[in-house]
Image (cartoon, rainbow, N blue to C red; front, top):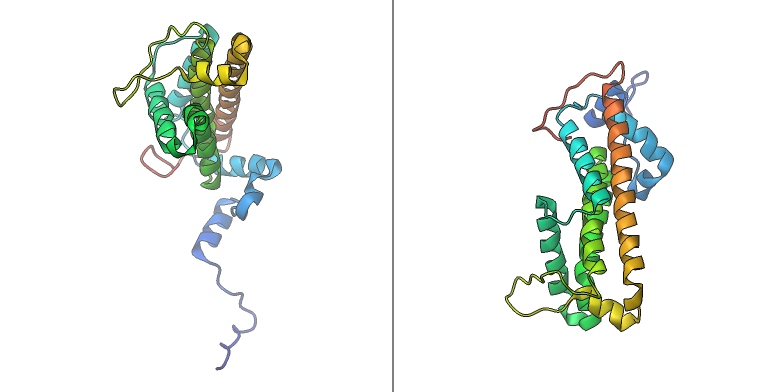
Length: 230
């Protein structure tokens, strides 16, 4: 079996189209594997990603973040569409954890509604969708706010319990904290969840504002549209 002949002298091997396109646009090629999660790489690659992105159709998502900040600061209890999504994830977590004993089964609902936004952040970073990753912090803030109300109700148990299967349920956090002997620490634990919500929405607003600024700063041109891959 013979090896292919070398390219003619004086001519460079042709680059792949994706590589040539990236170099013409002045963009970095994505780092391999988990190396793209290095802070220095993320900082530089996010700025490259912002080139040519249209900020104006992303602006409503930034405004939504300010709305969530107001909800966190006022500890609002009304449901938003995202809260209904979180409720579905919460119940799915319970369902998937049925084989692992009652404590894990009860804990899994709250754990799932925190784990899914965190996992989505990782997913969007791996896909180089930095605004999508930032928005997941806003989603995470809503999950923490929901949990802060649920945890804070562990002693009084005044919140109505909703179960999708029509059976009488238990108050997750009354059971968890009572089992761990922490029921008297309910206000402090609820305050930690509220603080996590405040930090999460603060991270989102900071990242989203910076990304939008990178899109509108002098020299930027917008080529993407709402229906294109961001």
